[in-house]
Image (cartoon, rainbow, N blue to C red):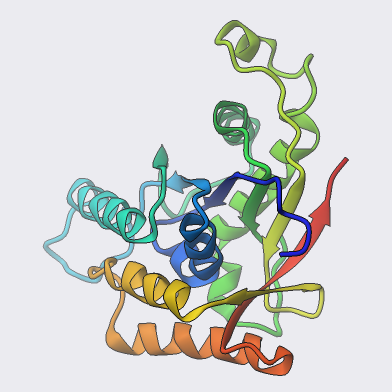
Length: 236
């Protein structure tokens, strides 16, 4: 990254446990290797992703939270924050926006990574999960203008959470709007694969191979072994 020399903090906001492992875990691993403080914020409880007729939402939430925490340890995260909204019913509400603002003001990221708020019919249909779209919209709205405006959510000031200006917003996308390719080293890719594997209730060996192939394909045109693609938005 050409302009991150004084950066030291990043945050990833996604809808579900394992979303970040698919979309940006290579970049997260690279930041953690450099010694950055990286925080995940998970919007939902991940309570719906099971075909097991004996599974309950409360049990699945417990499993998926534990998997995400383990994945975070593999990557080297500073912390994983869980907002606890119900899986499959996420909306880009003012309540969700405020909760994300709270996390931004608490952890003060230089870079925030989020999901795309747009549905694309030219990429994997799974990327258009309504929870992903809601998390992306709420995250972008939290970054600008809500987290930086002092008079927005004045009660957060009373909690000691002062306004914070995110310097760069990276939106995960494989579509034509992607304008930034972040190289992933072999060490970073190894951490990313192991982190995805930690989500054993959700992924298979085929899932890991598919994720690896995506990152290979992103890197090949640029001479990288692996990479991740983003729409990068510079903020002032």
